[in-house]
Length: 419
Image (cartoon, rainbow, N blue to C red; front, side):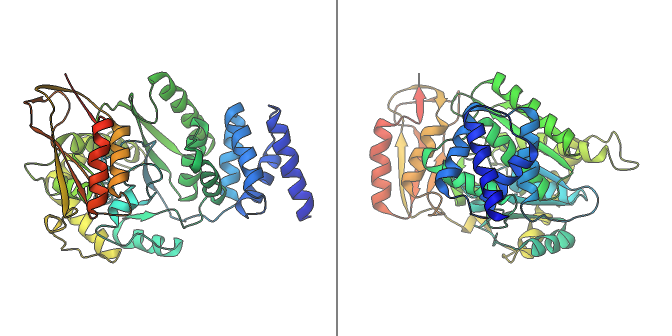
């Protein structure tokens, strides 16, 4: 039986290589072979390349998502389960760690499984790990949510949609990820984690993963189609992202931004707060729409009140405690790397561009995400005026040689454009 199953999977990959459409049975066979590590990296790569160059029609996308979920474990919750996801690619925009406590404080379950960085300076799981452990079993996650309403954990070892994790590994060396692949990956993980109501953040910009609004609209349509087939309510937020919403990039610096917003610090990054409130508001409105007696409630007004009143910070400390961290942590005592360098402006003018991709290059050289204290602090943001020598950004690392290499690299990799 196993050999027949394997042959069916191999024949289906051949069929896809010639541009033909696949049935659910054929796609399930491929996903099952991949999930159980029986197909091998070469054939898995053939499937990834064939499928994501030829593309999938809507029905195949649904089959792929369903098969990824059906070949792995699931999290189980009752009632409304809120979730949020970003198509990503934006360094220093850590909305999840502010949004989760807001949604949990509003009374909705939000078991947030997050990724570690694959290509960026930090994933949400890397940043949350600054304040609490993030590695838990599915049963422990269900218990955390029962206790405090929400969690922010690493999803990578849970085995949810396991075929997806294997496909990610074969794509990673090529830094190759098609839009279809992003859609299937997100939806499979969300279904497996029990989500019923999802807000999807789709940042668009010249140095983002999705660079054109027309691509974002195609992606949004496919997400909406899949959500309908999977009985999930999804609200989309397509937004222009020309710069990073926060000022800190790298796990410790991003955690400090998050806590500045939760504490309503006067110097908090207001763009990060505004984006989080918009996303949390959309998600709460979606959830209230299915809550008896709460239909039509303004989600953003509720989100703003929860943040301003300190309820979000209180809930975040409960989540940290439940996950085994120090609930009384003072984030101002969690400092970035001891080796630092201030980058001055080469000329007077205004900041006309900040390159998210180049930020990532420099931060990886500094040691992100492995060195949690490494990263970059953006002292200046878009459209700000600067004089020659004004500090544009500050680099941090725990390793003086890495800092030196990053400083040298920045001479040829312009993060800031001054006009």
